[in-house]
Image (tube, rainbow, N blue to C red):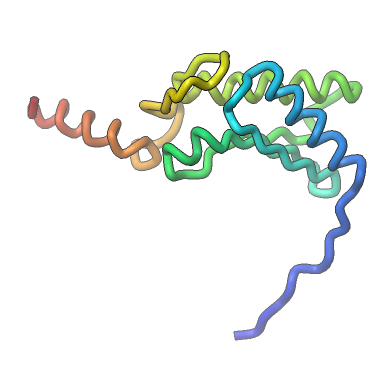
Length: 131
């Protein structure tokens, strides 16, 4: 098997600053959720990940914003990212407030096989008529 290393991709300091700004703003709006933000302007995306949700779900859920759809200023991009973070919480049926140990019980819009195991078991018991 031939190994093809990924070419070096230098980190753009502007991407780092935007990621920090988005992460800090998400933490101010929705504190305690363990936000992780990766900005890749060369690739054209902003990845927003909530580490608290992913730890409890044991899956990788996140939100991808594409620069091509983000028209406007730096402030507008940050605002869109905060909206995406809030939507991510809502899809998990979680409050847009401080994290207080809540865990997602289901993931709106995700396939059954990608739902939390507890939700899958509950639904299977319901469908089979098992109490």
